[in-house]
Length: 385
Ligand code: NDP
Ligand code: MG
Image (cartoon, rainbow, N blue to C red; front, top):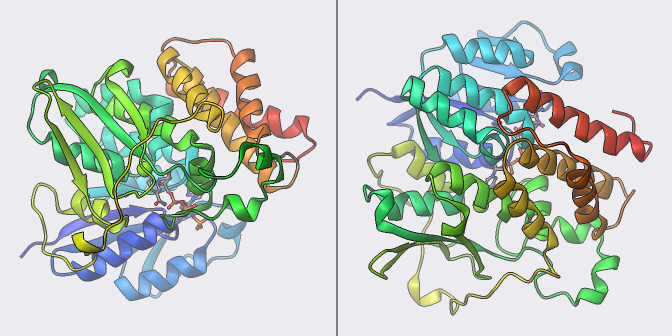
């Protein structure tokens, strides 16, 4: 059997490691031909030995200085420009983009420009440049299979149904670390508390974004681009158990949902096996052990960043990039102890108020505004880049 050749961007992160577990179980069907890390070279090299990965990329400048040109017969590439070059030249079938934050954007573009299939975890790519991503897909016939659990659920529940048969999609939200904390205690929230997600094991940024629910705003924007739906047809709903990963409401009033215990290995496996389903024991759900499933409205006073983020998406253009960059900067300030948890939303709101709209920004403008917004917020607070 010919194995699918997989590129894994962000192999040392939370999604990256779950992807490695999926590939270990499915080693008769999948092989990794390229894996990347930013600074965590040692961990990447260990995985390369375990999975016999021939091509590796390290992107962080400081980490690059410390590594030899070839290790154990593996080719090592350095920096984002070499990464983009190798994505353009290497032979592969599918690329998992599990880089965190805005740093994943150029890789997304390179994969789509190559006409390849992209298993997309890096939702920021769509948030910042959904309009450009759509253009590339149309031009090069490339395919995106979502890895984000909610979008994987929607992708599975939509199947081959045409868009006109969908009345709405409902994206579920766990509510993050502070869904039951009294509002008057929000000013006391510590970084350690915000980094603990009640249901999911995830990287630091997405865990913090779940606590503020900015993550759900990013996911609404992601759904807008992935499924070509206007914002009035995308709803988010609180579902604290994280068992139903999202629901499609059809025009006849029927709802189709996808469910399992919360574990990212399942949407990753689905993206890598699509259009087939591979037999797997990685995620097992026992119906009788599940908690009662409940749904509730997302409270604006508890989650102001959700509403701010969605509003930036509705306005479109450059504003989602501004919101996303301001949020990345605010999280950096929060984790550095410079601002409190409730200030994160204020930083984003201020950046949006100051921003000049640009309706159809090109990639160069998106990256420039992304960098500028981030840098201005940090330097205002005396943090050197
Ligand atoms: P992590 O922070 O755990 O991992 C990020 C990965 O990206 C690491 O391999 C890291 O390398 C690499 N990386 C970091 N900065 C850069 C950079 N500047 N250039 C290139 N590579 C970089 O993140 P997650 O795995 O949690 O998330 C990855 C993406 O998936 C995010 O967009 C997130 O929103 C999305 N996602 C995550 C989910 C989850 O469950 N974790 C769920 C749904 C979506 P190094 O280790 O060397 O720093
Ligand atoms: Mg998600």
